[in-house]
Image 1 (cartoon, rainbow, N blue to C red):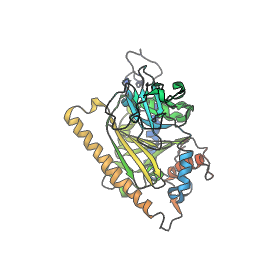
Image 2: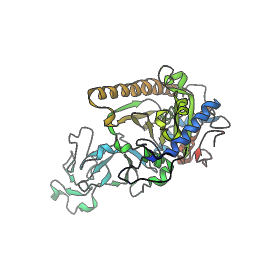
Image 3: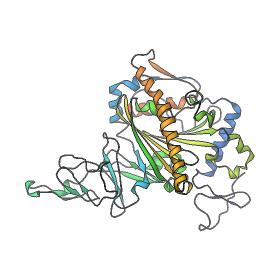
Image 4: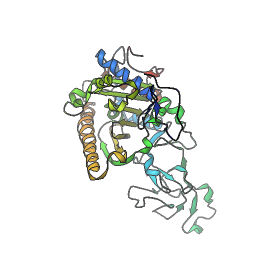
Length: 430
């Protein structure tokens, strides 16, 4: 059923609503654009009916060296993690004047702060005197008035300018204007905050994310708040950890008592835009969509939606909560993994609501991610230097792994891959 083209006054409708063929206002707050939802759900229904889910014509191969070679790691640090915007976190952390986000990753020590003028700015989190960290997790204030260096007491305003130098007379000729904090580009959109590691670079999210930006706009992530965040160092390459999210082939085996009870075996629809990937994984109730008119379809009722946001972030949208996963390489075979759960306050009220969130977090974080996905990834990593495999063989239902690796290799200048695909990556359904 097609949505009507007429509209109602803006005080009646929100930007997330649309009008169905009968003139009813259908709320889509917290969901992607209606037309995109219908397109994805129809693809998922066709895939389930077909029973095969190939995304490529032939198997792929990823060299094991990509996960263990120190030179590859250094290349990635110099290119992948220097030339592209990076997701920094959720905007709920920087709503108030003086509120801030501080980097979890020592290899990229930034701080993002809401200035007294309301402007969001990013800086390298280092004093211009001798490089001490200005803000850390131990910083007690929820909102800053200034940046104060704990080493020698230099003070910076929240716009990065150097306000004062302790015992300034011992720095004759010091020009404060030349010693402000190093500013980094930041962008805020639809509840997510981005930062670029290169000063004077630009962040154009419309160009960088393409149609995926439109998806995220419609999910209304801005209306969510943070519940809990975990930080764990895993003994595995950062790409190996991300790739556990990029295929459903393992679900009936590795997750046989967890996710396999919720998701239909292997029914995954995917979409590629440049270096970013969207997946929709059908739940076991996907066929219930046949009993509802298309005008009432809401994708999270029948599927979970996943976004690989290049280079290091993975956004997962479930019916009642959202997970932001980020993977920060500490070396070729060590990764700092962070996982933050977001929720809509109206959906989890009081003690019962908080208890329900705790249960969801422990299930997702402690069981599915920590004890299943990443535990087996660490096992794979341990055997790489001593095993029989020079390459990992990638099946036709796992083609997003090859795609993700191609994105990395294109950025580092390694390998020769065709990256011309933009659109659904499902064989026979394009």
